[in-house]
Length: 174
Image (cartoon, rainbow, N blue to C red; front, side, top):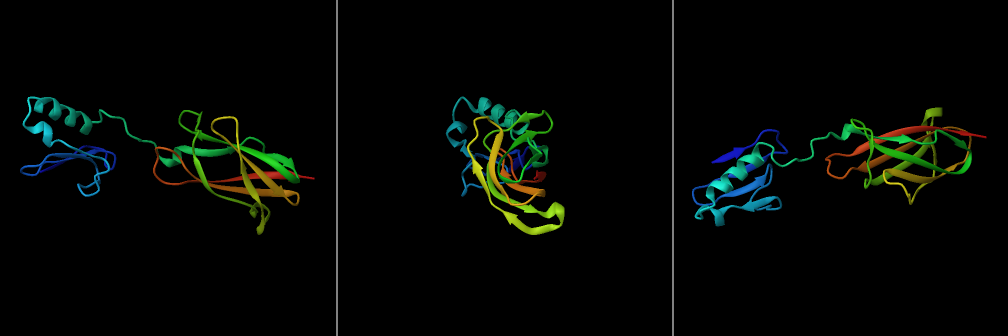
């Protein structure tokens, strides 16, 4: 027998074959075992009611799990206008529903080009720099000419599924 809680894929799955009890995060299997807990040791103990109530609480949302959508996050530029040449730009990663800064994102892809001025093939270097402020990510840019530049970022946000992708436009002045 399999019982699944509401809110899949973030619900809890309880599998009760004839002689083996196991609680797993929805979508996990016994062979994967990453998010599974064996309930067998508790079946023949006086704690069966406690285990059953705990399992029910898990199914009904007793343990908070990531419920945000990756669309609830965005990068925003701190400086929108900077001078041509070598420049440092900072971006904030914001959780839109509450406006809080989000630290610890893994930015795994970056691109700098002049697509806003119709020159997408005109690219330049972009290098990550350390930041002293949580939720703020800094980059060194090589803005070889004046005009509008697009900064494209792809990141993984801790605790969320999916990839955050943002394209930000800044203007390089002479």
